[in-house]
Image 1 (tube, rainbow, N blue to C red):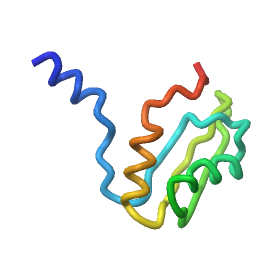
Image 2: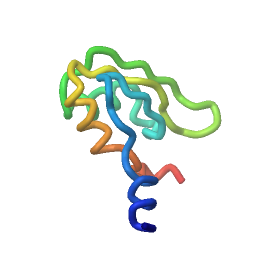
Image 3: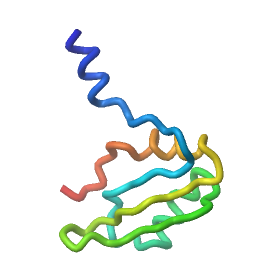
Length: 85
């Protein structure tokens, strides 16, 4: 039972659209670096990002051209330690 609860708590969020919200990418990447990083997974239709006023991180949302790429992005980056604390 405990393993099932832990698995449920750490499971990535379900991806139901090609648009996903993000936060935590290092701000020193800049928008161009972030775009290049995410485009390595697949084509991007739209990207919005802003630098946090409190922490050196980027937040925003990205729309990929298909939902499979969005799922790959979540699988790749959800919960990843970006070294930001």
